[in-house]
Image 1: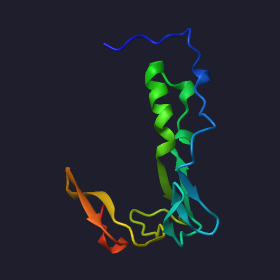
Image 2: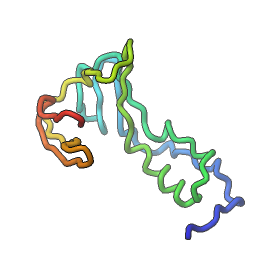
Image 3: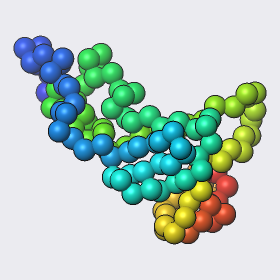
Image 4: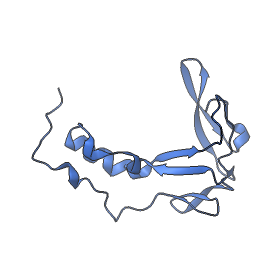
Length: 130
């Protein structure tokens, strides 16, 4: 059984430390960098990146305080790519940018209920439903 929430500990003390390095950068010139290394270039203007810690609202969570601290301490290390389209559709193809001289690991669905890993070097190596 999980321990009860401790109402004495204020949840508002969950602020991100200013000393944490910025892991991700999506610049206006269309480059996405991870720890200063360019990963994608020629990113279209309709693509955005949002860090996990910006999306999460820790002050409204019912999770135990130690769990919130653990999640908050690592949430700056991940995020979501997204893009906007003019008209919604059931299938949308949109470029996320150019991927050069890097290997990548992706996860894709190869059967209805099964996913597996896939390794590649360029965007054409990505499988459907990645």
